[in-house]
Image 1 (tube, rainbow, N blue to C red):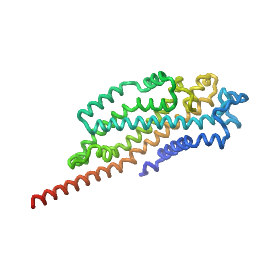
Image 2: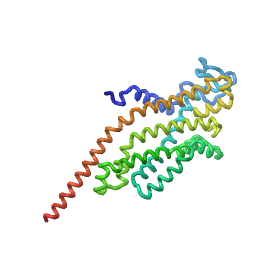
Image 3: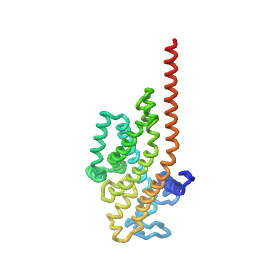
Image 4: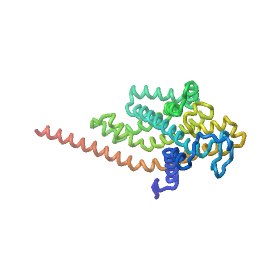
Length: 305
């Protein structure tokens, strides 16, 4: 049987995702030093031109090169996705795992907080808060998306943690007096690696989608070029009605390809993480058994003395 990394789907997903990360890192440099272009430069002689040799993806109604904007906008969109993904995953893991493992009053409080936040529609709430703020840049939007996207993941992680804390290895570690926080970090979190990875990738794409949606609705300033701002400007300048497909189609296609890449990568996450989980279970049980044998030996020595 082929492993996950050997499967065509996962390799394709990793290649696509890696390509987007590479473009995000080197894109602006490539535009400046290789294409010798400027995504902000206005050319009044080439207004709303279709793809050509001079402009491979055409120009906007202001004469700006669409290819240069797509490459430059990759960094802004990916950065928004990564920041919102990290924040949403960290909040979901911290609240969900802590709630499920500690139980008792802590679980009641954190679970109540999660349930209340889960009833709030995240995108409309982000839209309202972002629209209320006077200066809504890309990072502000990223933080808002991350803050409002965590409840669903926290509920799922809590349910998984509730099942983990009653397994043999967890009970054995409790018997030998293992610290609860060390159990969460060292024993429980590795079992959730696959879930956390998939959750992070979904949150990244959700962040990119949400940013594009907010920009399309006119929320946020043009501090940074992103795929969302490109679609927003195309909509404001009636690019769709005028048939300027080369303006709005490329950033939309990039967003769709990024979502496809994360979906393909998710296929292999569970298969990659499962072997390590089995090893972690055995290691925890062996450590607990060794500790219990040591305690039994010490007790027998004391009784003999």
